[in-house]
Each structure stands twice: as structure tokens, then as C-alpha cells.
Length: 214
Image (cartoon, one colour):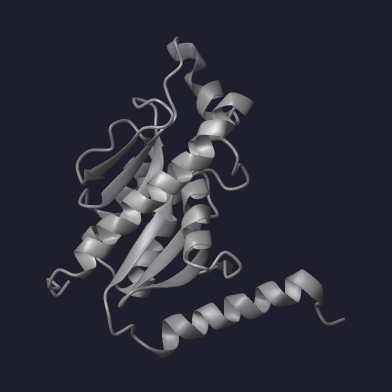
């Protein structure tokens, strides 16, 4: 029996995405934006990077364009952004191996580490605080560590989204794998907008710079 409904729609989106990747090289600048997190746990603090990606997709009008790509075990959406193109990526893997999806997508789209943005949670910043970090160490974040290992580079810019650190270290695992409280949810919506603004402004400025030929 032929597939129908949402499954058929998803198959069409996946096929169209593959065609857009394989049929032509994008003539302008291309950037990969990866929202790190645990697949299947989208509402937890640890997966707040994926929530930011969802907001970026809504802002750029591609929220209905997510398609699963088995070549990098991720959900992808391609978004026009001025003269550039953003490849939005949400790994379909656990956080500790997110780097495999990011590295496979980088190879698929022919992108260097400097053209890849990582969006992830940050324990050492309170909820509501953001920071853009240009490369450097993983600072104890397992998803970032996986990306550094798989890309063999630490040059990726990172948008760090504060989730706050619990009082006792024994509570960290439960904290990051837990969902935002109702009080935190009130801060989360404007935070996702602010994160989207910060990231897109940075990419917009870099897109105007002369290409390094990477």
C-alpha cells in the first residue's frame, strides 16, 4: 500500500532536500547552524539549542521544511538568508555523539569548521543570558567535545544559551535532562528571540565579508 498523509509529505521533503544538495552548488555563502541536544528529548534544558533552531526556522519561514536526512542522521532545513543560505541541522543522535551528524553534514555541504555554528546549553550562565564564543575549548560540554573531535577542529563559533547551574553538583544531570519549569518557560520565549537575533546578526555581518575561499 502506498504511503499517505504526513509520511508521504515527509518523504517528499526529504527527496526535495537531497535534490537541492546534490543538483547544484549554492553560488553564495553557506553556513551550517547546528542545534545540539538529545534526539527525542526536545523540551529539556540540555536540548535548548534545538529550541533555538526551531525559532530560527520560524523566523526564516522554513518551519515546515524540516526533512530527515539519513546521510547525516539529522533533520535538515535549508533557509535563504539574503545572498547566503543557512543549513539548519538538528541531530537525530544523543548529545555525546552529535558531532558525527555535524561532521557528516559539513562534508555533504562542503563546509569548513569556521562556517559551522554550534548552538548549545551553558551551565555557567543563568537562564536568560547568551554569549557568542568564537572557537576554543569545549568547556566541559560533551556535545561540543564531540563536534571538536569529529571535525578535528575547535574553530566553530558557538552560541551559548544559559540554563543556570544547580546548587549542588549531584543535581547537574537531573537539571540538564529536566524540562524548564513554568517560571523558566516565561523567560524562554523572549530568550529564543534574542538568541535568534544575535546569531543571525553575526552571520549577516560575516556574509558581507570577502570570502576566504574555504
